[in-house]
Figure 1 (cartoon, rainbow, N blue to C red):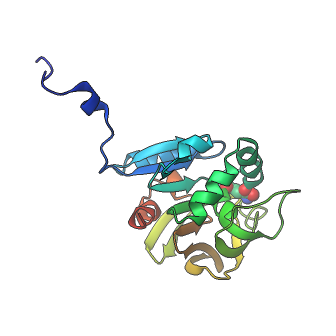
Figure 2 (figure 1 turned 135 degrees about the vertical axis):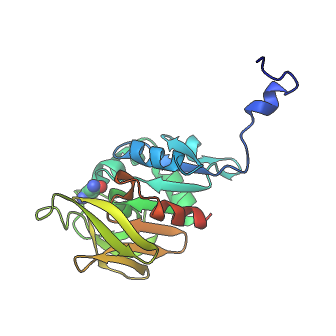
Length: 209
Ligand code: GLN
C-alpha cells in the first residue's frame, strides 16, 4: 500500500508533546538498562551527554531525569569535565523530577561519608551516604525490597547505604539499612530496579512530572 500523501513532512517529524521526555545521564554506568526500561514505558528516553541536551534557553529540555548507577567518583569527574555539572545542579535545584539509582543516589546526597579524593556531589537530598556500604559483604544480590510504593524486585551492586536521613523521607529499608528516600522532586534508591525490569520506581518518577 502506498504511504498516505496528505501529511506535511515537517508536521510528521515534530515531536509529540504528549510523550514525556526522560533524560538519562549518559557519560558512564548503567545507561542502556534505564533507556530500555523507559522505552518500555511509553516515554521517550533522551541520552544526556552535554549541557545542551539537558537545558536550553527556555529551561530544561526533558520532563524528568535519571542518574544511573556506575561509579559516583567517575560520574562526578566526567560531568565536571564535560561542563554538565552546573546544568545538572541548575535543573535539579530548579525542581526537575529526578531519580538517582546507586551511584546516582550518591550524586544526589548532600553529604558523602567517604568520598574519593576531591569527589563532590550535586546534592538535593538532605542525606548522608556511605558509598560502598554493602560492598565488602555483598558484592551482588537480587532481592525484593518492600518500599512505600510497593514491593520492588531489584539488584544490589556495591550498593551505598543512607547513614543519615536528614531532611529526606524514608522510602525503604533492606537488611535494616535505609536504601530508598524521597525529598520533593527527588527519589534516590541504593539498588538497581532497571536491571530486573521492575518499573515501580520509574513510574513513581513519572508521577512527579
Ligand atoms: N559504590 C559505587 C559508587 O561509589 C556505586 C555502585 C553502583 O552504582 N553500582 O559510586
